[in-house]
Amino acid sequence: MRQRWRVAFIIVFAALLVLGASSIALKVARADSQTAQPAESLADALQVIALLKTQYVDPVSSVDLMRNYLSTGTIGGMLSKTLDDPYTRYMDKAAFADMKINTRGSFFGIGLYIGLDENERLIVVAPIDGTPAKRAGIQSGDHIAEIDGKSTRFMSTDQAASLMRGPKGTTVTLLIERGTEKLTFTIERDEINVPSVSWQELEEHPGLYHLEVSTFSEETVPQLEKALREIQAKGGEGIILDLRYNPGGLLDSAITAASFFLGRDHNVLQIIDRQQGREVKKTVPTSFRTELPVVVLVNKYSASASEILTGALKDYNRAKVVGTKTFGKGLVQTIFPLASGGAVSLTTQRYLTAAGVDIHKQGIEPDYLVPILEEEVREDGLPVALWTREEAELKYEGGTVKVPAGSQLEVLERNQEEKRWQVKYKEYTGWIEEEHLQRFNPVDLQLEKAIEVLKAQLPAQLKKAS
Image (tube, rainbow, N blue to C red; front, side, top):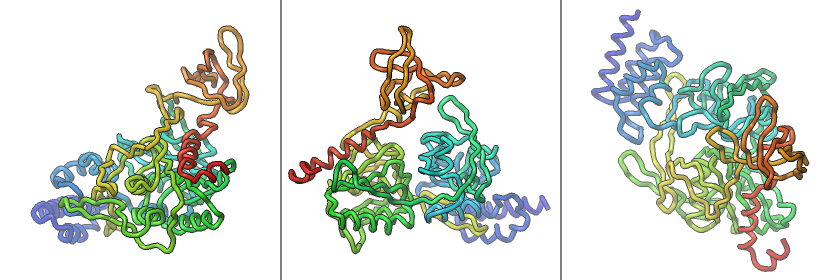
């Protein structure tokens, strides 16, 4: 049996090298599919290699691919070792099914947006409000090192999502690396409903609306159109479009979203293919368009499709951008189903913004930079600053000082065993109990700046009224 497997392997690999044709590789691989027993079968590996040779945005060596497949034993390992591209990833049948769920609405899981950082580590982009993960204390930027004891090294986001999903009431255990800390969370799964769009009128600023888009899924376009229509019907005077922590999603959804703000026949992005050909993607006809003033909010977790929308609105000066520099993902992936029922997501194109700006690994610079100290992390993994949830006492060498609720404190050190932090407050340096602290700023400084920028665009009478 083993000898027969080796012979088939050599035949398929030779055909692949000489012809580079996915059809021949797939045909021979299928003929031997009964003898390929691993979960990631030889047929899948060969089909992925053929697709890389014919569809990937850059030239790839078949020899390197096969050598790395043999050395790692997995398709994910092969892709990671051969390509400097965390977005090209293999999905088995279950992971592919989960990926399709991701573009819809609800499922059973723990409620995390996840991604890969510059070192291809699996990280938390953001926990979803009201979900088990959020309640358990999972935080943006956490590195998920293990899922139920399985290392996430070479693991795609789709595979990780598949492992974290499961029947309601069952549990999943995550090993989290947060700076220098290693934390274990056992979380019970529940139904996760993910509204793509949410909005509300700003309480102290009548006529101004805070509109959040959390991802670009199949539901984003109808939800966004409904929200914009209702804001207009209520007499809205301006919109803050919040794309912070938005990891992206479907390209078509981002293009249609841009169409609601720009109208017809405007450039949204420029796509460059493997032959260096350039295609301009334009806005599409829609039954609704808003001309209300817009300010866009972004941060370092705004990526992909959210950067496409931000770039288009910024390039046409349709909106001012507030926040911090975006993630910087200027690559386009195409999903190719495999004969096994799985799929591979390949980087097939690069994109530039509407004005031809390459943002890959660069990000989009906001018009108004508003850094949030809590998002900044020191070398030892501690946050730069914290704030007090309630009034607390800071104990320092000379005694104690009252720290009002909502005060921001500079972090110096953390004593994990005693659950207290050494902090600086005004001229005082001392220790404060962990129970009185929170990780996020009570005042959303970025939102406050966005309101200021938006009000500056309103007619004088409206500025006064709000």
